[in-house]
Image (cartoon, rainbow, N blue to C red; front, side, top):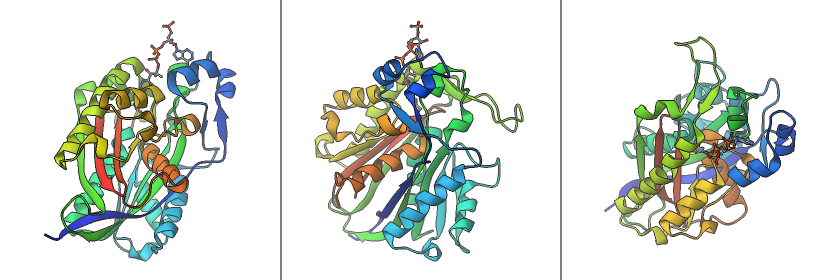
Length: 325
Ligand code: UT7
């Protein structure tokens, strides 16, 4: 049986040049490199400078992904940007990317699911491709989380960073079995009752201001390991594969301890969880495509590998996606 598969034909990423180290943060708030590294695994993160925006980062990652895929802007039917830190309340970052890559047709919109945004965006892209509404899609995760930080709150400002990652996804034919290249399934979840665990205390319809990120870290941590492990298991079983068959796990990069605990829970060697947390921190919707790009460039992820992407974030939202690279 012939089926349509959403196949990844190129990837790219971009990190702002400015690096903020733990030692610099220790001069701003009551913290230390030792505490941050031991509790999170983070050593440094990239942050934007004045005038540098989410759309700037998205554009650079998108341009690299298009070059990697050898696809021109005019071949793209749809731009989806997963972000929670848009340049403006409207229009979307996706329309900015659309115009800046020189694309004069098709459609563009943002997806907002905070740190799970890239998984949500991939689910949308996969649906558009399988329902033949689009053939070639540019999917970007881009964030300037540094703009949402309360730089006097040590419980949050040490965790986040800025960056962007992008994929070019194209409709391809498969035989309908697990030897196909492309996305096999995506699993999305949310529980809006858990709003208070992770949110921004502002917005156009409340304070009229952007606001700052607020998090009950310990509570989020408890939900993270359980929810992520369950969504990975749901995604694997939906396609009838064993967890041990998965070559690489590309997780949202919130905390090294979450990655290690998830690996332990699933009885997977921690080395199979791609980690960029030390250098990137938590870049929200950008973290999964940034980690993917690193592992593709350094040769760990190869054509034909079975890959599991997962994330969890504000909402709470979480999810997973299974694909063959
Ligand atoms: O991307 C969205 C999903 N986000 C997550 O998944 C984040 C999940 N949560 C976490 O990663 C962890 O809970 C944190 C890294 C946020 C915090 O680690 P923790 O081990 O849960 O620490 P804690 O909140 O229990 O705090 C322990 C102590 C507290 O002091 P007392 O009350 O024991 O005296 C905090 O005040 O550490 C203190 N603390 C700090 N100390 C130095 C909190 N932040 C800092 C800091 N530096 N930056």
